[in-house]
Image (cartoon, rainbow, N blue to C red; front, side, top):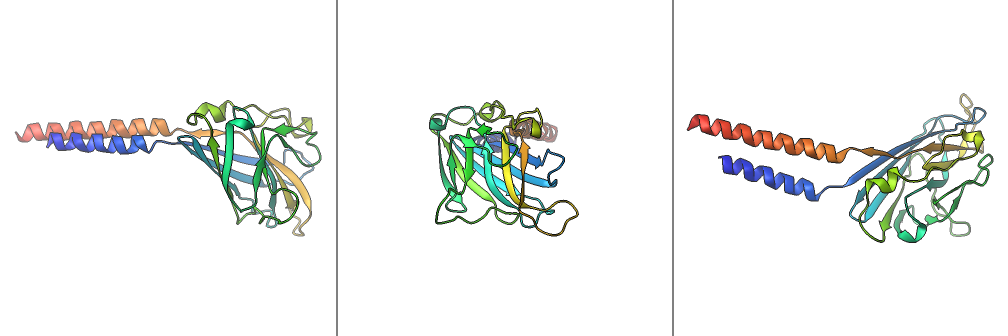
Length: 225
């Protein structure tokens, strides 16, 4: 009985250990400027395993039913030659580097990367409240580290957006002013930073719990003996 319990423990630890991945999230909020529309929400999730990172950019802004993503910006530790990109949905979106921030008040600020629908035909589908942007980012040398995200440099979008720097940003179009049901062509910014999900700690707790379960099974077995 004890051997069976230990085998189960080691099997589960092996399975979960090999499935280990970094999960990074961020919620971009805006617009930081008082005269611009509020209620801008963009949820970002990154699942990094090995040398690949799977990005999901999810606009979740119900106060702006016609909202669409103009450009999505992000910084990573490294240079553009350290990474490559693939598997864009919607098809036709791409990543350029450096990413010069669009819109008034940005002051020519740049992020390392900008994901966008490049100029010219054919036009890619819009990223909206109902259509996410997803893509794969490959690290050309070595596996992804948590520090690749959390230590990424900060971009200051001029004093108009606050003195604090940001690791991620989004320029959004077709926004409503709060309380105005008439769609406008106003634009604005949402900004945020990386927030790691503590999966290694979760795995440690799981492993501790399984070992405890094995110990309990052993005690039960000894009492029966």
